[in-house]
Length: 329
Ligand code: ADP
Image: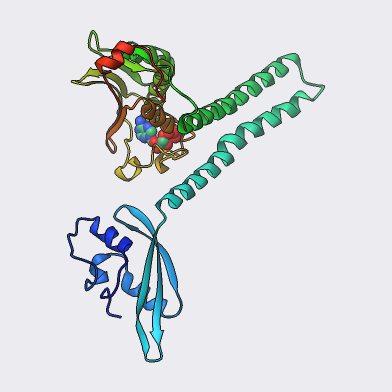
């Protein structure tokens, strides 16, 4: 009744010990100091009228907290508190909302346009010029849909391990240069200046050049898309002791710390990004490509000042170099 723990199972012991509380055990501790800031007192009081449940964050995980009062003839004897880890369910639930967003915008709107132009084409009064213009719109909108479906399938194949890599020695400096050249026109149209920083030569890494260039192109697209006109976007290649890294830096809005853990999830889009077109799949593709290469993805950002995304590839060991060509799952 006073919030002193009388009994705790081993899962509860582990959960609270995990925070480095080096407590001998939970029994005898005050639940209010173990779970501060949860407004637990009110929650317990309210539960007397009937069992209650709510979600809460604890130690970076999401829990379903359920409380049931324990009473006998002599009155209230205490409470039973159960915490169920629903972190994964919460993530899936968030993904479900994000997918709904994609369905309602990115799939519905091109399909609506396609339907509209298909109807117009069916009109016998339409001139030849108009007909050609409608066909152009139809092609552009279908391309958008195809691209969306392709990237979705790519991410799924990489995730499930069905897409394997063709690993060959790759010069990341050359890849960076090619990606930069391909992105230059779009960047210039959007008012961004692209720059490349690379040493005269870097060691090769074992990589699937097609996947790595597309991952890098995604990072470049994002930098160009999210940064305001008149700013610089830089691709930098660096040789480190045991690794070679390539990074894309922009002077855009950056990423809030609480968003950083989510941006690599499928379909996740930061709230601030909702006015800019996108599907939330680009960074999950990047993360999957990195995973396939056992490469690291790093994000550094000062919100309001820009972001730097880095892909860091380990240099191949002598053995790997000797094999030269291999396929890694
Ligand atoms: P998309 O760009 O289609 O939304 P991504 O998976 O590429 O999807 O990115 C996920 C989210 O990460 C974006 O919606 C945006 O909020 C954030 N983000 C990615 N790159 C940047 C960047 N360079 N600057 C600021 N925010 C970014």
